[in-house]
Length: 355
Image 1 (tube, rainbow, N blue to C red):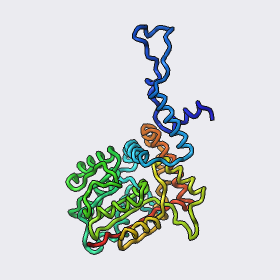
Image 2 (tube, helix red, strand yellow):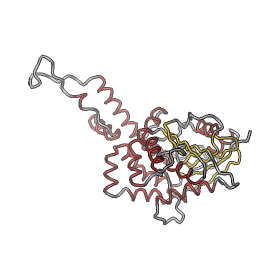
Image 3 (cartoon, rainbow, N blue to C red):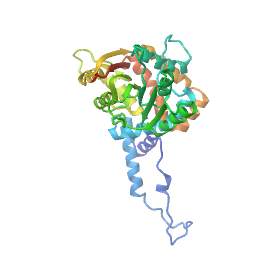
Image 4 (cartoon, rainbow, N blue to C red):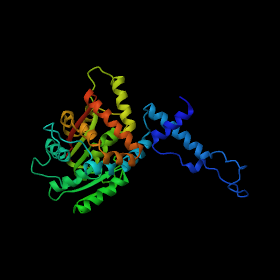
């Protein structure tokens, strides 16, 4: 690969071009800007550093290399800051899979709402007549789940956390528009270091955010810490398949698919549902249950891809920048991963031990 082609690829993979100002000729104060004898200065060290960084990140993208925890954290915020408006414009306020029973349903927004209700039913929330009063939505997006849950359960309040400033702001705007500002609020915070006291929430809800967590042990610990004694924890997340007995790891082909998805969606290494169960057992969680709903959400990615094939969506995609475009490409990889059986849509629930 030539150096020039690597530079072009670096620009494409980063989705932002180095400022042309860094390379612009700066006229000497003693000479006319129109002087043909003046030479433009060499690129500044800052510009060269930026270019080297761009090339390095392009190389990492091409090789699907893992990101550092700091890169993941900043990348997640940037990705969702740029892509959330487009998603809302096309799909509405719920940024997660839908519940496709029957599998040929086409009411996709309602399918997303149904997923929330069906997960709550599966986890037996409110089955004993005791509904949650305090809810935390860990990785809340623009707050669709939180607002739905507080409407569903009378007197409930919810706090949502996200790494994306745009999502937190938009979540609060929608809560105000829907008359829920006193019952649902959203803030920028790290799920691995939550800004809440221990033993606070009746319901700890994590819908499709666990896949972003680089430290699954710390993630589980924080979910248990903020849960009230006897509180319900629900984790719905993308996982890789459980390993077979005696199987040390996924195949190289399976790892390659996941690595490409990781680069697009700012994900760390994946784990299995069994890994989550083991972590919860180790921390003393009770009433642990799990289930694979991959077949239930299977039509979702095809529906998302189909919804993007219109003028409005394509224009929005271009305006959102390269990270969103790369995320759109990764939809095909997600579909491939589900079809191959390497990606699973896992549900895990448990309760925190009563004190």
